[in-house]
Structures are given as C-alpha cells and as structure tokens.
Image 1 (cartoon, helix red, strand yellow):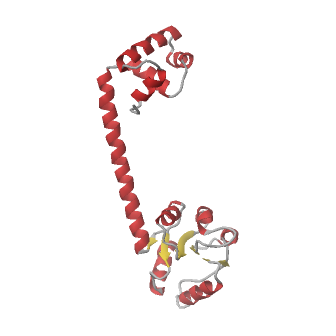
Image 2 (cartoon, rainbow, N blue to C red):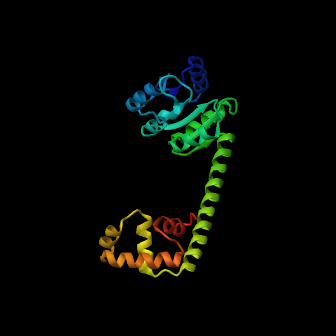
Length: 215
C-alpha cells in the first residue's frame, strides 16, 4: 500500500514498482486515518508511509499501521527525533526521498515484507547514535548507583533501618511503615531517630534527600 498525500508521488512510486513481478500495489491512501482503515481491510505485506499528510500524519498512525502491515517510511523528513520516533512506533524501515533509487526501494520492500529492517544512511546514523546514547545513559546510571551504594555503606544503617528508610523514601507514614514491617509505631519512631543520627539530618525530608543521593 502507498500512503502519501501527493498523487504525483503515488503515481511515480507505482511506476517504480511496475517492473517488479513479485510486488503488487493493492491500495493507496492520502492521509493517515484512511491508511489505517485500508490497512485493516487489506492487510498488505508492506505499507510505504509518508509523514507530512492531512488529517493524520505518519507518526500519529505508525503504531496502528504496524499492527496490520510492515511499515516502510518513505518521506523527505530527516529530523533525527522523527526517525527515532517512527522506529520506536513500529516502523521496520526508513527511506529518505533523494537518497535511494528504484532498485533500493524494491530491496527495501522485499526486506520489510520478509520481516527484516531497512534504513537509509540517515536512518542508520540516527539508530547508531540512539544506541550509543542509551549505552552512555546506562553506564552513567550504573555509575551513580555504585556511588550511592558506597555512600550508603558509610552511613552504617542496619538492615531493618534500611527497610524503614526505603519505605520512608516511598512516601509511607510511620503507621504504614509499622504495618508493612509488622512493628509498632513506637519502634518505627525509634528506628527513625537512629537513622536521623546516622545520616546527620534533622527531619524526614532531609533523610529522604540524603538517602536518595539528592543532597
């Protein structure tokens, strides 16, 4: 299926595909809303999806379309966030007008039809960059967790005191902490007093901030 609001583009794509014996255009749509309806009815193996369209653009319907068809985005938009969002939304491929020729379009359609992916150089660059950013965030998160763990060890809280402070950080009252840990409220208060002393804080708010590493 070809989804593009420009009829000239749709005619051109049909022309590209006419020579391929294993590819047949079964439907068209000029907006995202119609595309979803047609995809639900026809279940095409592949949908070539533009982004900028009236009524509903490509990004707003990519997830719905991906439930019924393999989505190959075919657009002139090269914004990195759009490419990433389309792929997160379920698109299997992304081609940019002017960066591919008819033979590559056919290869991309065949790949998506078989369940594989296909990216233009711009799409591949965005994907690699996103993976690198995610890996960096995970490393930073792990590093912060390690530093926080070392800091917490210095406080010297007992396992029970750690249970109490974790529930305190989760927003529970003394009564709720007592119920969860099967303690009396007086015992919880005693634990909190010891915790405040070890953390060198004066109240609950300061304790939460220090234990969570935000102070």
